[in-house]
Length: 312
Image 1 (cartoon, rainbow, N blue to C red):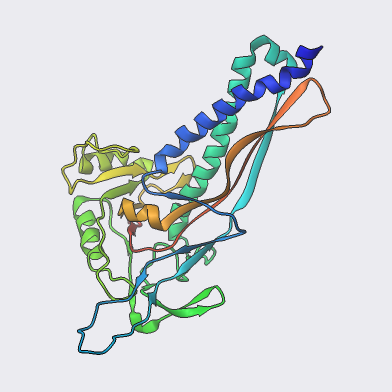
Image 2 (image 1 turned 90 degrees about the horizontal axis):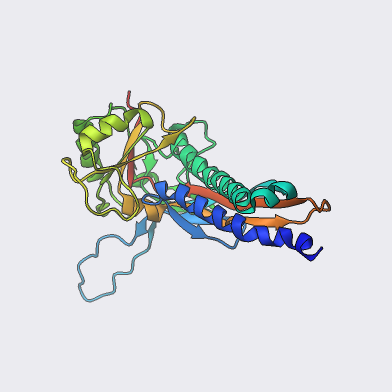
């Protein structure tokens, strides 16, 4: 009787380990360009660039200045969950196999939930319906990003019209010349305080349909993986990541280039609770329930570190 009562507690070690491994393996794909933040509040303010501008000449008196600000994007995480049961009979026949299967598949579901939300963030960069605008009031891919704000009203930032605008949106098909045109444009970006926006557009983002073209442009061995150092790349040492899967991510002609170091600073997945699996209490003694749970949101705080193209 004691062994029967303990069968559920014995399962958790197998389920939990499989869940953790599956989640980590799935999320590695986007880790080079998206940062992660742990939050303890209902929402999170993701801050863009800003600064104090060029120093004026000192002529014996203090040159008191003020901060020229960019914009803040408010990210509000949401909860997601799914529960799956393990049957007593299946666990008795193959406890390790059945529990690993449930843990692995729940881990995949949790990871892919975060992953597809990140892909949709990139896909919605081109969306002008007003529902996916950033803190600067325009879509992530826009020809009219305001350079700076002149203050805030509550949590809404007010555009400084005197600072001008910049574009991080092209309509060129993917090619070497289109990439170099985008890189040149990025070198002309300025920060909210008017200084050069120093960036290195070192990573190409493509849909699955353009991966073959990315290989031709960047080199057969240029696909970017976490912690990768050595690579073969004939065009400005660029590497690439496929941003698409299933029905989510970039469409067949869309692409982008970005500075992956700045992307990790300015594009974040915000977790209140990172993906985990938890045992659930059931009245049925012959079923052992496990619930995958995650509380997260994702967003971008600046647009200078990435240039998008519709590809047509």
